[in-house]
Amino acid sequence: MKNTLLDKITISRMKGEICLSPAQDKFFHKLVAIQGDLTRQGIEYWQQYSHLGTWQFWTVTCLLILPLMLVYFKIDRKLIFHIGFFGFAVHVLFSYVDAAGIRFGLWAYPYQLIPFIPSLSLDAAIIPVTIMLVYQWTLKNNKNYYLYALLTALAFGFGFKPLLVAHGLFQKYKWVN
Image (tube, rainbow, N blue to C red):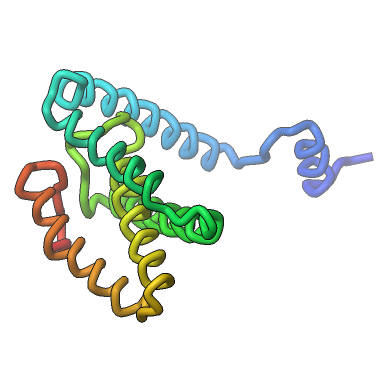
């Protein structure tokens, strides 16, 4: 009995194989090779320009560690899961947005803590910790969170990011200003 295409796909999937057309397979392998080469070049760049011997590496390290230490001592232990989950959601959201911006070539971080996670300090510490502490403060003081979150966003957008740009820790490309 002759196997139909559907039977071949079903058998292929049962074996754990992915069924790609030859053209798709060739294109996909090319993308994987480019990604591997890009990662190797990123590590080489990090070793030459962003290693432990540079002041930028230690600045980025402090931008990761200091906010995490601050939140450790300042977070309300009674609301730790509530505020912590909120901070985690902010971390995930900003990580995705930052990754997309980097991937589309809209911005970049020339100095990194880890060569293949370019915005770790911002996405995992500074932004989530700041938003968590603002959220905690608004809860305790019965203030409008949205107003203070907007003010925090403006401070980041017009204060902190330009400071990073001025020190060469963040670069903008294309239409980003």
